Image 1 (cartoon, helix red, strand yellow):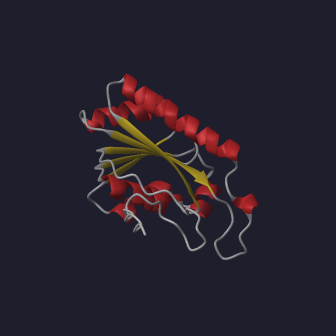
Image 2 (cartoon, one colour):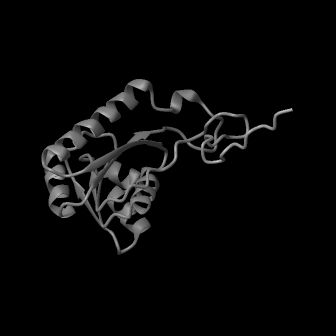
Image 3 (tube, one colour):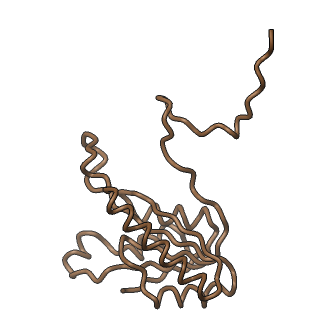
Length: 170
């Protein structure tokens, strides 16, 4: 009888209770600057600013695909981002990475789906060890900013004073 060969624990994918892979691991390539977008196209000014702040070190790009609804109700697949929305976000990331590489900077990208964008961006910044975060935020009406909050302040509060967070409008 032949003994089964040992299986390396690192070669197997992480599985949830029911045998499916739940989430991808957070990328941990180090970067000095993180460009974060809440679903908006990343403007050229943010790309140029990030290259200037990076001083030749890599730049990370994160876009958020918004999950609508609350976490208290019953799960509903209609609240998740559609494939079209995810492809649109991937296009924003790929275009930004191409522009960064054209300017001579190394870059990595990520699309994250989240209900809480400030928390997700702060986790990505901590995982990559960045010194600067540039947030692309849309122009909002005053009443909408009161209801939704200021994303730049929320991110800077979560990261502390060690990381500089600035907002850029498209």
